[in-house]
View (cartoon, one colour):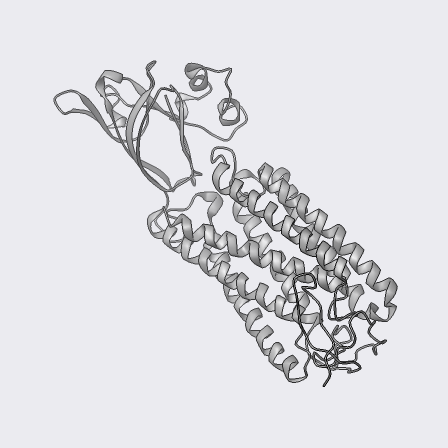
Length: 435
C-alpha cells in the first residue's frame, strides 16, 4: 500500500520494498487548480495495490504516519473513498488508466491512484503535481507560493543596503573611522546578498521544472548562516565596547569569545547537517518546525545573554556612551527575540499550508530590520547623535587604556593613537606603535 501527500512537484523513481505502506511525497493542492498526473508500473503478480491521498486533518495523516500500532488496512480505513482519496491501480478501475503490458506480466497505469498487497511493494512511478499554469504557481506547493517573489524583492533591497554601506564606508575611510566592526557589518550584508542570490536561482529553476538544484538551496542556507554568525559576532564585540570604548579585547576576553563563537559555529553546523540529512519530509514543513529549529532558538537565547552582559558592563564603565548603547541595546533586543517568537507563533498560530512562505518573509524582514538599524546608527552624519565611532583608526591609544569621554555626537573626535596588529590570542586587539 502506497501513501501520497507532497514534497516535490515532479517525481520519477522506482523501488522494491518489503513494507506494505510507504510514504512517497507531500504536496498542497489549490482548489480548482491542483492536479495530479501519474504513471505507475508494477508486476501483475503483485496486484492489487493502492495509492492513498491523505489530508492534514488530525484524523488522517497525523493519525497514521509513524504509527506502528496500525497495519496497512487500518491506515487505509481512515480515508473517505467518496473524496477520491483511494486510487485502485487495477484494470477494473477505469479512472486509474491501467493496462496490461509485456505479455500480461506488468500493469502500467497512467492517470492516478494506488495498490494493496500483503507481499510488500514493487513499483515504478512518475508523478507531476501542479497548481495552475502560472510560472509563479505551477510547480509550487501552496505553502511555497510567494517565496520566489519575496526572495527577489529582498535581494533587491539588501543589494541597496550593501551598496549604501559601501558608500558610508568610503566616507568613513576618508575620516579614518572605518573600524573593524563596520567592516564586519559590510561582510554580513554582502554575504546576505549572495545567499539571496543562490535562493533566487534555486527557486527560479524549481519554478521551471519542479525539481531545482538542491545544492543551490544548500549553499544559500550556508551563506545565510554565515551572514548571521558574522553579524552576531559584530553585535557581541560592539556590546563589549570594541572600537567604541576600547581598542582591544583583553587576553582572557579574546580567548573566551573565540571559544564561545567556535562552539556556537560548530553547534550551528551540526544542527545545519541535521536539518539537511534527517528532516522528515512527511512531518517537517520548515526549518524551525523541528528539534533542530528549537536548538537554533536556544542558541540564539544564549547569545542574547552574552550580549546583555557585554552591553551592561560597557554602560557601567562608560556611561557617556548611552547615546549609542541605549538605542543599540533596545533595537537588537527586539531582533534577538523576533525569530524564536515568530517560530513559536508559526508553530501554533499559522496554518500548516501557509507556514513556510510566511516564516520566510518574516525571517528576511527581521534580517533587513537588523541591517537597517545598524546602517542608521552608524551613518556618517554630523546630525547623528547615536554615532558610535569617536576615535580615528590611526589614533587609537595604548592597549587597555580606556577611551576618553566623547562628546554626545562627536563625529570623528580624535584623542589617541595606535595601529591594528591582531594575533591568535588577541584576535580583536589594536596595538600601540610610534608615529
